[in-house]
Image (cartoon, rainbow, N blue to C red; front, side, top):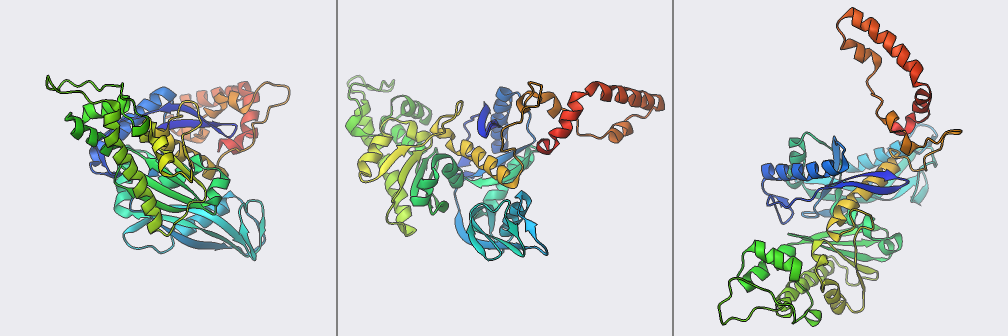
Length: 434
């Protein structure tokens, strides 16, 4: 869970909450009550760091049970009209409600391009004039209705609203790939705890989102079996002494264990790396097998590895050794306070949410204006943000005594006089407070 605000079109991390959970298995919630508690813990940690309260959130939906379907939707106009964010939102909502298989539901619609009347392949329609029809062509990301509604149930239990859902693959692409990489054909392999997600981008849009049930937990299980230690101890060894590439692992690093027999030699990092390498190698092979099954036999762009497991030494070196003709790198958020690859999905979700709010016109995308003859900018007028949105008539309805009502009016008039510059500022900045 991450809480952030936006300063001059850049994310500013305010609070991060990370909680280990047993309520999720291979990307599926298997215990709603436990998942709800763990989500609440993560929220509480992030809220405490940020010193902020929240009423709604954006959700990254794991790329399992996913299917991507090219879709076209349109809205009609009776007269000449200039396209704005509300029109873009409306046509995307139209795409969401197109017919679906009974067991499927839309996670998100990823716009590819737009058509205005006879003008096609438009990337940015905002501000253009339409006379008849406005159409969007994009990819609908579908998932299991049960899977999605279980996530919604956890959020509902916390009495929070879900603003929007994003497919994890799309969020990763928004964060880790530039426009050229997305256009040319690139792969992101997100090696998480219980799930590895394979995402393929080409022609600027997400084309494939698949998951593999082999990930970091399987490395931990392998260490547990080889060293004959509990999973908790195996996880500690993985994090502190694990290495994924036999060729560069050290034979000088000794893994101390309490359960060794008197005549038994302890394992070295190099010896253990032989077993870890097998699992990581299998993850990469299965990832490219998923691409081949989807008809993608050649990756012209880059291969980006991310997820908490990529923090282990040797993962990048092993991948480069296996994929010698490809450009391979580790992808992580380049942002202070959340620059670890294990946070790529959640930071990518924030990036996606900001971009879609800007597209619909909910976010201020220009720099804050400085008021003439003052030093006040948008960042410094926090007091204005806290002006109650409740109307005076609603406040009066809460006051039952008539004498108190008279006092309220007198105080209110006096307060209006004292507000001075802040009343003017409120009117001037009204549009982006909304």
